[in-house]
Length: 126
Image (cartoon, rainbow, N blue to C red; front, side):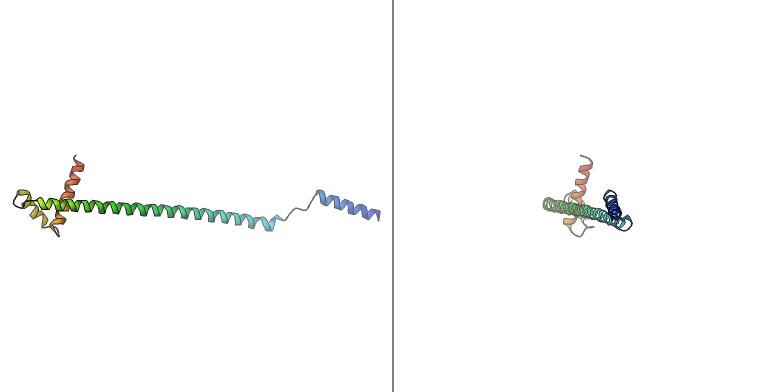
């Protein structure tokens, strides 16, 4: 039995110094693939969040622009009403405006267009 005991001791010592290597063929590749898939999914989620934020900012910008245009239109409308109230139809400007207004649905719309054009000219030639 000494030889058997010696053989078992040698096998035990060999097992301790050279433990069996885990099998890499079946477990590592799926794990790497899963990690890569998770990274891709995470990047796609981040990109969707970035796109969503960008879209929200663009919508806010568009809403603000529309709001500013409405305010400008309201201010022009008030100015046009005041201008029409002081316009004398018996002057050259009054007669010209009467003819000009024929192309619009109302004198107010014509006055708004006229004042807007004057405003644009003033911005071009201060």
